[in-house]
Length: 311
Image (cartoon, rainbow, N blue to C red):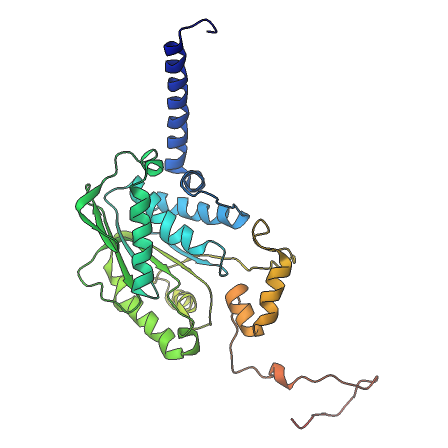
C-alpha cells in the first residue's frame, strides 16, 4: 500500500470515509443522542439529556405517545424538544405533520425557522439525504416537505383550525405574566382542549416540555385530568429538579452548584420550588402557614397550653 499510486491511496481513503459516514448515518437515524451530537456544535451532554433522548426514541417507535418533561430554565429544554426533535422525526418520517406551540407565536415561528434552516444544511443531509423542503413552501413558521410533511407554528391562544397533526409539541405554554394569573393558566388549558388536542390525528403523539409554575399550570391540569378518567390521556412523565434529592446538581457539566444557590437566594421559596425544582405547592390553604412560624427563644418547650404570638 505504501508504494501505491497517489490516486489509489486517495480512492481508498475516500472509500474508508464513506464507510464511516454510513455508520454515522445509520446510528443517527435511530439514536437521538447520536443525531444531536452530529448536528449540534458545542453540545454539552448531561445525564438528563440521555433520559430525555430515551423518551423521544420511545415516542418515535410508539405512535400515540404522551410525554411530559418538566425541567428547570437553561437546561436545554427547548433546544431538545422544539428544535432537534422535530428535525429528527421529520427526517425519519418525511410525511410527518407537526404542530409546534409555545407561549408566543413569535417564539414558535423562531423554532420553525431553526428547524427549517437545519434541514437545509449538509450536516443534516448527511443523515437524512432524501428529505427535501418544498421550494414554494418555506415560510419560517409554516413549511412543507416534498414528501407531504408539514410544520406549523402557533402561539398559545392562536387559531389552529383546519390543521392536523401527527405530532403536537407544546413548549413552555406559560409566560412569566401567566404565572401571576389563575385566569391565564385556565385559558391555556381551555385553548389546549379546544384547539391543539382536537387537531391530533389517530395515532398522533404529544410532547409537553415546560418549567413548572403552579399546581394549576398545564402539567398540573393534565395530570389532574389523567386521574379523573382512565380513558383520558395517560402521560409518561419525567421531572428534573435543578438540585437533586442527593444534593448533587442535575447538570454539573454546565452549572456550578454555587451559581444555582445564588439563583435560589434571589427567588422566593415558592418560585424556586416550582420553576427550578419542579415541585410547585399550593399558595393558599395550608393549615399552618409558613409566615406564622417564629423562633422560640426559651430553652424549655411549653406543655399542655396553646401559645401564640400577635403578628
